[in-house]
Amino acid sequence: AQKITQTQPGMFVQEKEAVTLDCTYDTSDPSYGLFWYKQPSSGEMIFLIYQGSYDQQNATEGRYSLNFQKARKSANLVISASQLGDSAMYFCAMRENNFNKFYFGSGTKLNVKP
Amino acid sequence: NAGVTQTPKFQVLKTGQSMTLQCAQDMNHNSMYWYRQDPGMGLRLIYYSASEGTTDKGEVPNGYNVSRLNKREFSLRLESAAPSQTSVYFCASIPAGQITYEQYFGPGTRLTVT
Image (tube, rainbow over all chains, first blue to last red; front, side):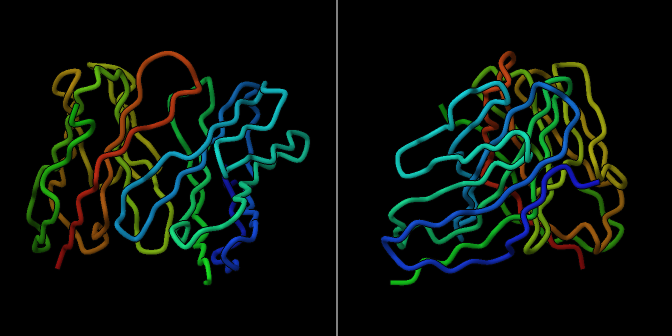
């Protein structure tokens, strides 16, 4: 079974609007971490935001927030006030506490339209 | 700090040739990872090293070997390259300790096998 599922291969959003990128995960480990990374066309991986399985509140970092619904095993990334520079691939990832491995989803390609 | 460095940045190999991808980090991190990213895909774990002196297989280890030379360096070897190994290879590292730590990525090595 896939550990991380991103069901949106590509998305468009108008500049200055908000967009939600979906991520669902599968784990039986009660302790885990969820991460979002951005990969622009230049290829580097940029860490955006982290959510822990025991965190009571949704994580926020500037224009990025993570909509964490533990019972549904979803960890959606919300980008507010989209900018042209947000056009990139976005990857959801999970780390299980019992293991030292990270699992990545297949990514969502976001295009921000002017 | 240079962070995570990878050499070479680009490489073209013929089928059957061998080569070693080098990775080094100067952040005193304990764990290091090798991933491959195929076009339009997410990252798949090849091998990882939880600490100096240990290595473990990831999702796609076949055709690769690794060496954790010391705490700083983690190399990936292709003994007999195949066209299916054409990919972008990323090295990453994390410090020991909390699950909250994100991975720090190198810039990637773009490998083409003809």
